[in-house]
Length: 135
Image (tube, rainbow, N blue to C red; front, side):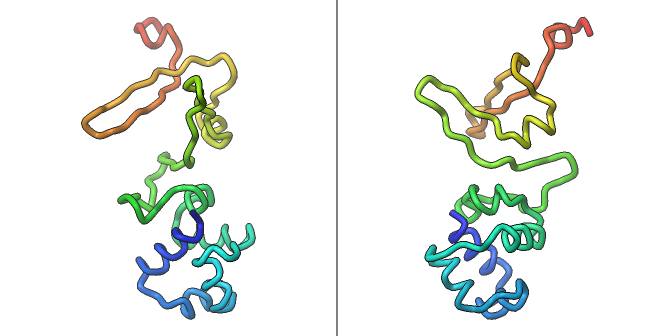
């Protein structure tokens, strides 16, 4: 995933592999290997690339940026936490960063909402009293 995302970001920025390499202090050959999947940037370079393009490292590594119109510059308070896999019994593991941001802990109740027209599903942390208007 990171190989395609680096290639996508570089091309979207309309820079050559050489220019991209200079920007991040690596060789053109390194960029070529990253884009071909032969190797991957170390965590420090991932952080530099993610910060430059104003995305999370998680997005750089796990979200297919070129396959959809992902807004790279997220608004204040909006996050892309990455992708999750649904287990055999429908379990979804919420990424740690998302749990920390929304203060979700074991035993909390989450409301599941969906919009078939937009193909989306969302979770919202609720308390029972708040949900029925008694808070």
